[in-house]
Length: 169
Image (cartoon, rainbow, N blue to C red; front, side, top):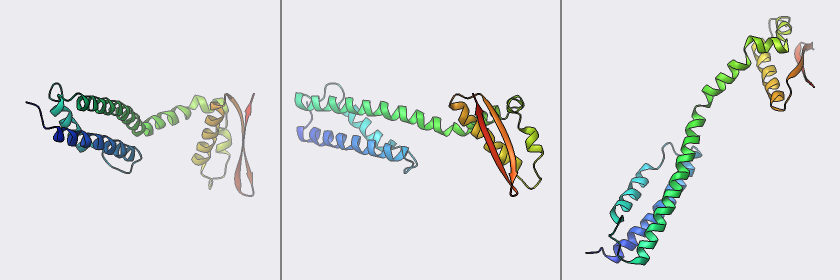
């Protein structure tokens, strides 16, 4: 005994609207407007899929629409899963960023650019750690453009440090 055609049409319309709502809520989640992904809507979709899976829809037009909605949902689900992995990867970047900073601040790297002696000559009221951070950021920026050697000079003008960082070809 098949299900009522009106009930199937209503469920398929609900299915289609749920897909749109889930997609919209995932976009809001990835934009950090929502705190949690829309799992409640996904449960409802899974219930509809389980209800009509296999042989229960005898009307070929409705079965075709159901199969298309399932295919669309699965395509979107793959997209959301990939974005979720990227999103979770972004959560890990502070750790990765810390590793990058530690690698840049290795003593052998600082000796290569040899500006540590200039930092020690600066007056005590100047934040040497901040200047070192600025220099290393600028060096990293130049390295991303393909430069490997740098001329670093720190001069005091009117009581303020002036940094002169030039890449050497």
